[in-house]
Amino acid sequence: MADNGAVGGARIGAVGGVGTGAVGGVGTGAVGGARIGVGTGIGAGAGVKAAFGLPAGPAAAAVPAVGVAPYRELTFDVQGDVDPATRAAVARIDATDLLVFAHGWNSDRTTATRLFDRFFAPFPGLVGAGVRLGYVGVVWPSIRFSDEPIPDFDPPAAGTAATAATALDPATRLALGAFWPGRDAELGRVARLLDERPESEAAFAEFGALVRELVQVDRAEAAAGADGAPEVPDLFARDVLEVCRALADALARSGPEGSAAPAFAPGDGLRALWGGAKELLRQATYYEMKKRAGVVGERGLGPVLTDLAGRRPALRIHLIGHSFGARVVSFSLRAAPDGARHLKSLTLLQGAFSHYAFSDRLPHDARRGGALRGLQRKVAGPVVACHSAHDSALGVFYPLASRMAGDSAGLLGFDERWGAVGHDGLRAVPDAPRLSLEAALRDGLPEAGCVSVDAGSVVRRGGPPSGAHSDVCHEELARIVVGAGRMGR
Image (cartoon, rainbow, N blue to C red; front, side, top):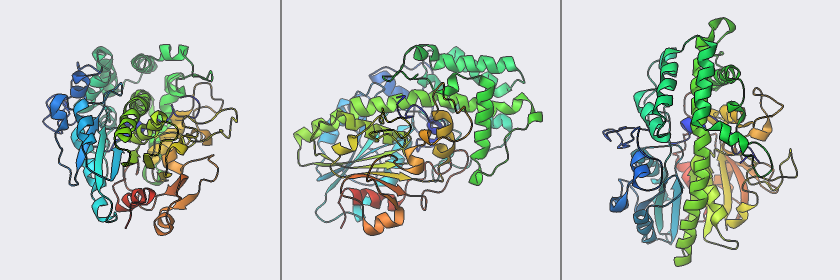
């Protein structure tokens, strides 16, 4: 989506999913049950489900250990195809209101379930007597580098040496093998370069070529978006040393309160730039994942919910998404028919897509609108964007990597065109109020339309480089969902 910066946003991939080790139990399922292997296929069906820890067949309907009830999970593959057993289980939920929550980057079903468990926990005590809640966790194949701590989920990362920061741990290495099947030779060489950190321009050039090969950048460059703009982010088109310097500097700026000294100095040599090279690899996984989130939403979740509403017209559905899960639930609106009234609210938690996504006209190009322009009208209630300035994943890396190839502003500096909805809320949407979290809880939310809620008073914990991006399990945010859906006492 070149029209609103939706393609952009780096680093989110690494941190956007709330889950401990993106690949816990890689290959064996011993830790987290991910069962990810290098040679596993990514196509539809049982292969991809096994690759990303998703259930296949009748076992998919098994109820995970979540403390609220009735709870079921909807699982999707990379093409957006839903597992039939999970779809049938969700259809049997007896409820007046259905909470549908999509996780962000997370390749481990077990840790996704932990997120659902913690986020859903306050809801039974918040809703009115006439509300019977049903709970759905949307599980879709995604990935997170396992060296990123998440508040209350992961212990602090061990070690601060440069090699520890750049080398790929075995879990992440195997997850990448499942993410890019059949590319074991390329990934092996990438891993060796990140481990050895050679002080060589030729090594950086080789690394950049390998990353471009993984994302098939040459083929993507040949294809343009509907408006003629290139589909490839600037990260993959520029000189690799320039990109690695910019990303290494951004890593430093993502430290505590953005005040850390640069990660490198002119005299440090090229070895100091390999942290930026690892970031470039994360951008590559992000570039693939952002497309997948849109596909799962538009081709998978949206049609499933539309069909469910047709069978149960009295059911009220409330969509919730974190990070790229916010993209999943938002793109599901594309599949909702005009005039549909089954979607009663949409709540975005640190959404990892453009803050202009719902705009009819972009401020910097009035001929174009956002990727989701006008689709808030398909939600009978409000579209609530919770955002936080403490989210350095969206505040630092997203605008840096969102610029498209050919942008005259270059790599460095901030341009409002590339902001993320989870960092500063929705933009360029008329009559869309901007509220503090305290005001939203005290005075309530609009009955319909877009509204931005500054949740920085609670969404504030998390270390570098992601900051508070995944600090979303708070009762205050659950109360926002309840208020948006008019489900309160």
